[in-house]
Amino acid sequence: MTSTETPPHMAIFWDVENVADESATHRSMTERIRQAGTVTRAYAFADWDSRRQMAEELYSLGYDLIHVPDSKDNASDYKMAAYILDHLVHYKETTRYVLITGDGDFKLIAGALKEHGVELWLISNPIITASELPDLATMYSDIFSFRPALDCVRPEDCDESVQSIVQLRHLAAVQLQEVIRVITKTGSKPGVGHAKHVMNSLNPDFDESAMGFGHWNDFLDWSEAQNYIVQEGELPGTILSLPDKISPESVKMSKEVNEAFLFMAKVAEEGLNEGPPYNLMEFGVKLSERGLEFDKVGYRRFSDFVLSAEKRGLIRIVAPEKEGDSPIVLPVYDVDRMQDWFEKNVERIFGPSVNVPKTAFLKKIGQMLMETLTTLDELEKYLTIPKVKDAYNEILAASEIPFLPPFQQSLAHILIGKGLECTNIVEKVNDELRPLGIKLRCPV
Image (cartoon, rainbow, N blue to C red):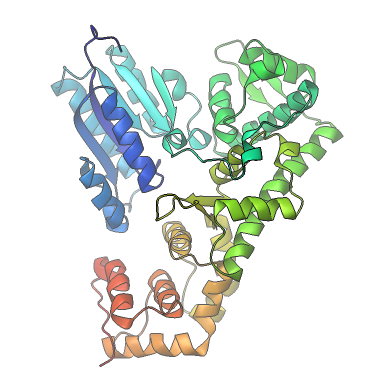
C-alpha cells in the first residue's frame, strides 16, 4: 500500500467451528489483518461453552464473541451469514471483508460481496475448504501461514537436498495425487486454483519453476501427460481427478510417502509414552537415527516435512514455554482413532451403560490428551489402575455424585494420574462440568 492509498476499512467474521489453530497463530493472524488496514468490527462465532479458554484469548484480541449453541448443524454459519449481510447493509464504509472460514455455505455470501464491489480476504485451512470459495476471494491466506516459522533443527537441514529435476517432478506429481484425494475426501471438487492452495499448504517448498515449469498449469499438463492426473473441462472451471489406472511406480511412491508420515506420528507417540515429549531437535535426530529420509519423499527441508505432517493432522508442534527453547512435538488423536478406541474399550473401562461419546466430545478428548501431554496408552492406564480409580471414587463419594460423563471422567483420571493436588483436579474438572450443573468436592 502506497502513502497515497487510503487504508481499507475492514470487518472480520470468523467461523471458529470451521477454522482454528493455536493461540500464537490467532494473535499473529489478527495482528497481520490489523496491519493491512483499519478494523471497524471483529466477530467470532462458536459455541463458547466448550471453548472458554479460547473465548478469553479472542476477547482479549478485540473480538466480539457471538455464542451459537452447537445443538443444530450449521447454526454458526447461519448466524455469521446474517451478521455479514446486516453489516453489508448498514456499514457502507467497509471496503474489505475478512472471512475466516472454508465452509461452502458461504459461497453465496462471497458472491454477494463481489457483486457489491467490496474486497474479500478469505482465510482458511485449504485442505478442508470448499473448492470454489478461494476463487471468489480477492485475497487468500492459509491460516497456517500465520504460524511462527520453524528454525532448522540442524544447520545442514537449512540446505536444500540435491535431487534431479526428473525426480522432483515425479515426487511432486505423487503429492498432487494426494491433494486430489484429500480434497475429494472432504466432498469438494478439486479445482485448479484450490489444488494449488492445498499443494502449497502441504509442501510450502513446492515451486513449479524449480522443476522447469513456467506456470502451475504447465505442471498440470505434464502430470496429465505422465498419467498422474486427469483434467476435465475448460479453464477456469477445470476439475482434477485421478486416472482409472494408476501406474505401479506411482502407487509405490505414494505408499512410501504415506508410510513416512505414519512412521513420524508413531515415533512422536512412542517418545511421549517413554517420557517427556521430544523437542523438535530431538525429534529430527531420532527420525534420522531410525532411517527416515525426508528428501526421499519430496521434501527438501526438514521443517517443511514436519509442518506437512502437522497439516495432515498426524502430529502437533507446540511452541516452547521459554524463549529460546525448541518447540515440542506431540501425537494427535483424530476423531476416527478416538472412535475406534472407545468402541473397543467403552464397556470394559466405563461400564455397560455408557455410550461412545458424540463426535464433539471425541474431538475434545483428543484435544485434552494433547494439552495434558497424554497418550492413549496412558489414558487407558490411568482409567484402570486401582490407585487412580480409588482416588477418583473418593472424590465422587465426597461430591455425592454416582458418575461423570466419559470426557470429564477421563480428564479427572488423567489429572489424578499426573499427580495433581485434589483442589487443582476439582477446579479443572468443575470448569468442564459447569454447563451440566454438577460440582465436585474434595474428600475432607
